[in-house]
Image (cartoon, rainbow, N blue to C red; front, side):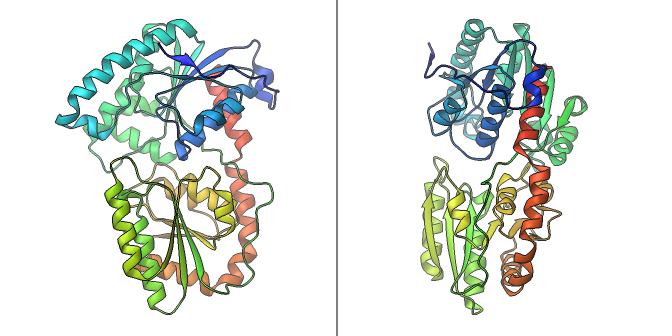
Amino acid sequence: MSTPTSTPGTSTPGSSTAEMSAEERTVLVVHPGAELFGSDRMLLESVIGLREARCTVIVALPSDGPLVPELQRAGAQVVITSMLVLRKALLRPRGWPTLLRSSLTGMVSAWRLLGRVRPDAVYVSTIIIPQWPLLARVRGTRSISHVHEAEAAGSRLVNAALYLPHLASTRTLVNSEFSLRTIRDALAPLARRAEVIYNGVASPEDPQPPRAELTGPLRILYLGRLSPRKGPDLVLEAASRLQDAGRSVAVTLLGTAFEGYGWYEGQLREQAAISGVDVEFAGFQSDIWPFLAETDVLVVPSRMAEPFGNTAVEGVLALRPVIASDCGGLREAAGGYSTTRLTPVEDAAELMHALSAIANGWAEIIDTVSDSRAAAMGRHAPATYRAAIALAVIE
């Protein structure tokens, strides 16, 4: 049986949403991982919003990880429990036995937890934990699905199958217009009941300003998973081209590979060694802001359309110019700022030219980073996001 790792703390009302809650409600929050990447950080913001609304929050996770202490600090109770998490490996024939076993054990564990907690609402974070909306519906409990995924390039049939269980939820939230369009193409009935809530992105109150002059190497940061679809190899290729063109560069890759993708990190290390570029593999760091403070340019070179792009917004909030792929939700996340540049997907040459243009126009760029930060804070204020999530769950 699953066991709690902490008990709820005492929250201090922090928003008008808290005043709307006539009585304390219990919300069971379900999430498929315990790391601190994009969707994990948004899950934390959602939990903070629910706590500010005076909800008792119990978070069910499939494993321990760095997200757990952050949730506990927010005043949530954390339960580690078996659950079905749909990974691509499980959908291949070799993974079917594990898929069947996880489905059975996950269903039993979820049913028991729902019976023990008896929540007023279930908040299902991401579409890859499909059993929870269905089981909540059987128990007569409201469920809210928050969709963070949008595989526009994938099979519509597969997408429809992934979205289908979430028709059992009473409400659906999505993180971008791009995500909403992707859902509409695959499963129109779900899109008709969906609501867009842009991610709330926290940042330091007083971020370190960019360098006044680019003396020494141009410092380039990649932040995210080391995976082919995220494109860190494109950063290395663009940096190598820029260095060959006569500008000194230094690259930091901040992130780790998914389990089973050690081969790709090995390729990156080999590529870095051959290129002659100064490359630091910084690994995973829960606090990204010191790295942003030490960089000149953040690059988000995704090969595949992202549902949104928190990383791009974090770069803008850190007072840094950002280069992002011109695709999917990254257009919404990085578009509309004077200090951001969108480049064609999988085009290292254009990425190099964008880096060069930023370096050559550095004086003009740094004059407008504060304006870009102010605009990003208006679009992605964490307090606005938290209140919107809490209202969607408890109303």
